[in-house]
Image 1 (tube, rainbow, N blue to C red):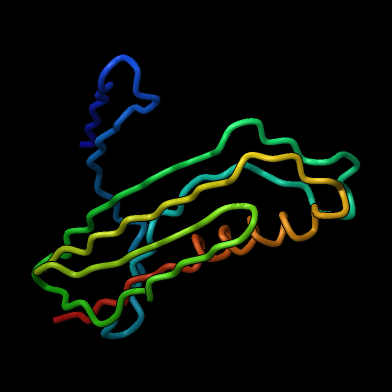
Image 2: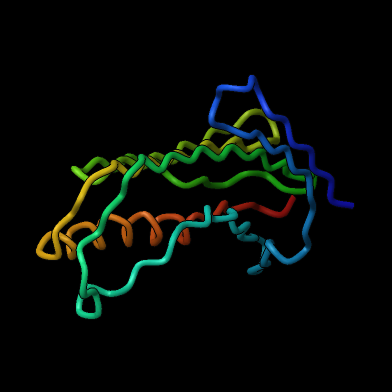
Length: 148
């Protein structure tokens, strides 16, 4: 059964904290004596390809998201490999993904910050490339497990 809770800190803080607990049998794929566990990617806004974009990009306020997840690995698996930490920095913002093993738990903290600004159409391919790199990274994270 999935459960969640929302907590709203003090009145003047612009954040909401959501705690969500779930399980799924569809995230793990077996390949012989190993299995791949897909890490849930962060959802992010859609951007049109540079050739289709007709107007500049205006971001009035910074976009900042933090996601932290813990994956509890069952006792019949050993953790073989986790993704490498990643850190991207550009004029458009920052992105970090950090992975850490603690006992049979994998802790993941991901942060995205998109800087506010007015980005002219000429800069759009670079802005698009930065966001695309983030999305590609988010969709390429897997944990390799060894069946015991």
